[in-house]
Length: 203
Image (tube, rainbow, N blue to C red):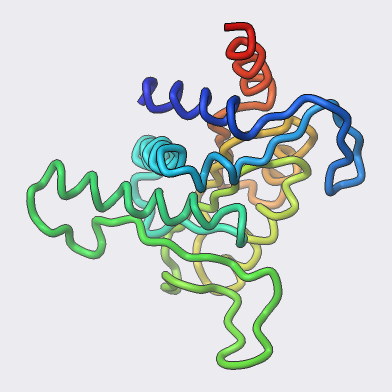
């Protein structure tokens, strides 16, 4: 786990972190910007993020049936985490895994479709299933909370929340208030990424 985590941190610090003057989506000013998608859609970054999140799920939420999040920041995390669960079973059990041994994936649309079934959730869906919500960057926690609420409204049971990078700007508190029974874990803080970015630049 620690090697995967460290390699992933260095990829985020290299590909996804910029120092400068930025205005965030929330309107707040910041001296740095993090865009995790350049890491989560990078072949090795995607693989590592899936492995790291799957390790956290096995450690904290072993009863998870599926992992999901708001499109599109969560999309590569959901796919790679779900794939990591299948790779893990093939590697350790040397047989095709049963459906209930895997962590499947679902995505939450930003707005309900006006055509077709009008579903908000794409992919895995089972009433009462234990699910974990994932997101790439948590600032205020808005996109994470939207996904939590959509999963709940569809009848699923949110048991945990995982975020790749916590910007430490109030998101954790907002998410914990929205989902008090679902423990929140972030893999890295923005401070971790900044420190790694500066260390790598100095090399």
